[in-house]
Length: 350
Ligand code: TYM
Image 1: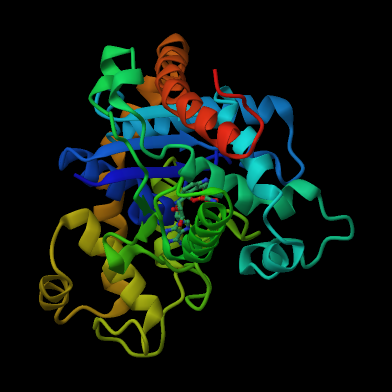
Image 2: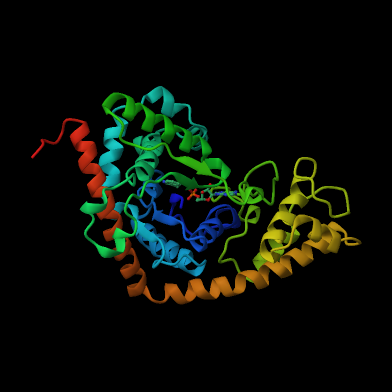
């Protein structure tokens, strides 16, 4: 099986891009019985100014969201990044072989820092921590593992990282740093690869400007649909989605990105192919079609929203899930860190 690692920032309600591009794909991989570790990357969520109370809330909200979307903590290790200190220690070690020039070139960094006067160091180091997240779960030795639940994950190595398209450059950096470390200090890390599953959803577009991706940081809330949005807001945002001047419903992501984006969403929630969707929409104009998409989406999201709400009302359960996940993740990552310490000359042989 594949060995999968991925992460998501707890920055409030997730939008359909996160859901279709990442979470729903994780749920599919979970059903295929792949070994999977998923992290709520709270330390990454601090790289832009944050409010402590809100962050705590968001960590629980994200836990409830992932569970509500179908992530099963019996099948995957689901944990909070900051509860597993090995991530930050490996980040430091990798930071010492990263260069400022390389990090400064990453598009996500450029984008986020472009209008900032005082750029936090954390924002600059962000991709090194992301690299550490992935690499710290490389292969572990079967005999060393003591917890029975973790035993089945022996030999766990993150070899596959399911993400949306916007993360690909960060994963490339991860590959480079893994190679660099191996060259300097001896073979240590396998080289992980990003996997873009459900390709048509890997870059869901903004509803206001189909040239841009759907994003949490877009100041216009009408540019996205959040999983927890009320039915009337979902309907309004879909109906106001920017399309073009052609009235038929046809799928052409290059020439007609706006309407194609809606077709992708529709195809996902109905489990129908793009062709089927277009055939069914024959005779409808885009305005009428938007109404269909809005209705379908609202009824699709309702049960998911109910589940998220139910999980949110059981705070203790959420904390237990995170605690258990963090214990499992710590066990694997601590073993791996020992090897890194040894390779770097920090640790003495017994
Ligand atoms: P984050 O929290 O911004 O997003 C979580 C996931 O959602 C995907 N995504 C999208 N997919 C399709 N269309 C969109 N419009 C869209 N917007 C977001 C993202 O690609 C991502 O997969 N840096 C990461 C978190 C992270 C991580 C990791 C990921 C930290 N460490 C290790 C993988 C492995 C991030 O900010 O994701």
